[in-house]
Length: 541
Image (cartoon, rainbow, N blue to C red; front, side, top):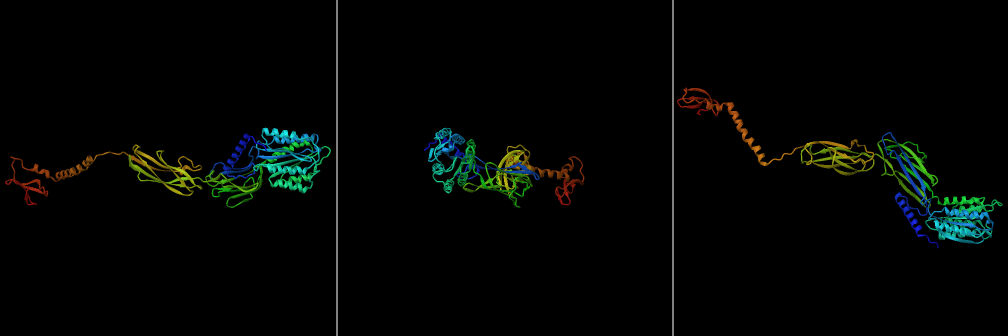
């Protein structure tokens, strides 16, 4: 039993880890025994289009190898050493087999079987790293000189048995059967050969047959038999008129078995948002169907590694359209090997991204320094997808606070902010609430993102209660006195003292310009009594 070097085991494990990581990231389920990765890509350019402008959509499906040109391969080289192979044919046959070994990857393995009348396993499966290739080529060089008859059935049966027993379940397995003659001994019935080839195919083994001609006998092989073996074994039949062409055939088979499996029955569905774009009916790959709701459908029988499937088409924007990675309107479904309906949901898509601040209010527009002002605003998502974005309160373009809102498309929300004016000097301030101030919503039109209220901050005066009371009491006491003084002067009350006779001056009875303090009528002075008398009040004053 062969031992695989530790370095090669580590390399193989690393390759498996990379493969599994890729599958988990791409969303493509792992399919055991299928080699090569189906890569689906989609691009939309430009990333933003205004109404009337065009966007170009490109969908690409390719198949690439895994390591480094495909998956691990277990190959069995069955070499004819019968008597008719003597001479240059035998030399060329061994050289072609060694060239095949050199073409294998470090994760591959090869087995060498020789046959004539008897069949012999010259070397079991050996890893085709540098050391393994040397051993395999030495084994090929060690095949003894040709002699004997052609027991072709025994060679086929032995190779199928060995590959079934020793082949790796995760590897692609193949048998390369070379002969220059027809079966001359042993079983010769075609049906038996087909049974063996079918058994190989049932176990996932591809059987390739190579018929070699010669200078004297142009076609000594039974081409019909070799073709039927290859067909039943899911392989191919190759004919080399001369041994010099064997190397090219072996190289062709090596490339064939390392080629990734195709994706078949590929179904591509593109769902266009007809409310924001229109399809221009210009796809480079004609769709199978275009539905009225904007769905475009392609049915592709097969995509191989030899040629990618690429479709390009354009749409015209009806609104302000942005390209987004958050939606996957393209679905690709395909079959591979034994697995069916492998699905990939492919971004990007097209959307309208539009957020806005639609109203703003505050509890005051004029406050004293140190007061807290309350503001609120209604923000909206006018786009076609859900958005999460910041909303900020700004004073003279300086950010005071920020909150984050998440809105489904077509919905609104009320947001609240408080502004403490303690650290702001008395002045007139421009207070704004801005939706998406950091411009994270790509494609948004910022012209409707801001609402503003002008707010005045005035000075604050500090007073004690005593001055405040004095400011209230003094006016209450002084105002009546001032009013009485003014009113009395106007009525002549204070003229009484001035109107009395002066001592030593002659005084006569009569009426003087003196008024009663009660009724404000003129008084009469009686010198003999030295008193004033009010006739209306009928009393002395």
